[in-house]
Amino acid sequence: MLPNDDKPWAKTLARTVICLTVVGLICLGLFLDSRNMLHIPEVVGLFLLFLTIVPPNLAVLYPWILPTHHQPSNSHATKSTIR
Figure 1: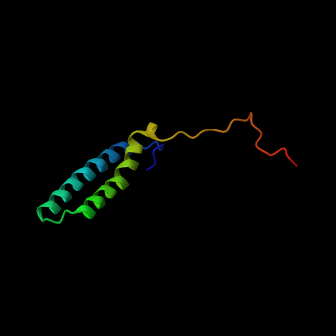
Figure 2 (figure 1 turned 180 degrees about the horizontal axis):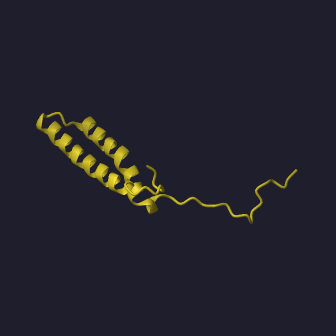
Figure 3 (figure 1 turned 135 degrees about the vertical axis):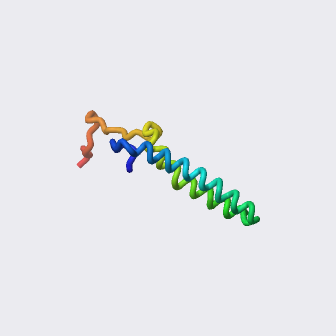
């Protein structure tokens, strides 16, 4: 599932993955907090898990947030003229 694919189910799946990830991370955070096991390393781990799952799925939902690829123009010489 890439941002520029034309798959009709991709946006629905990306929305579902984002929602389940956010709900799961909140539940995991609350569970760890109830057991007094939520410390700085766990918070960092939850944040890194969020960063690995959500941004690629946001790129599927909103492809215009990706950087555009610049096409090289033909007006510039691509080979060196110095011999």
